[in-house]
Image (cartoon, rainbow, N blue to C red; front, side, top):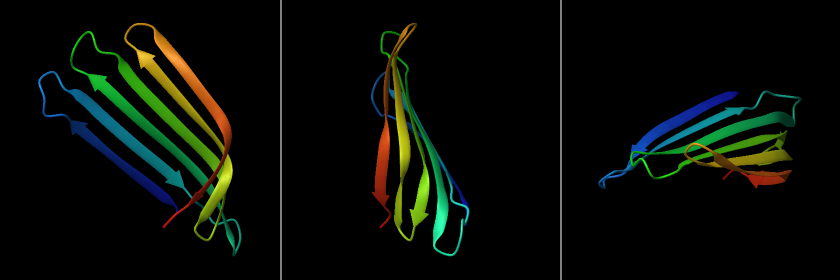
Length: 100
């Protein structure tokens, strides 16, 4: 298995709910007998149904190497909040993760 695609829509059960959409894309092709390339993208979006509430969008990107159940490499997170104009937060750095 080299490609994973996972997604969902969620709607809150309150008056004027947010609609949440999540998407995960992961690609892990074999590099050699002990290592794989690790590429992952996530998109997390909150879409309000109330006109005055802000949209919230988050994207997470990871590129690195996988050895057994450990992944490490470079990552970036991007977050936007707003309605007509958006505030942007960007965070770039390294990552280390373990799959259980």
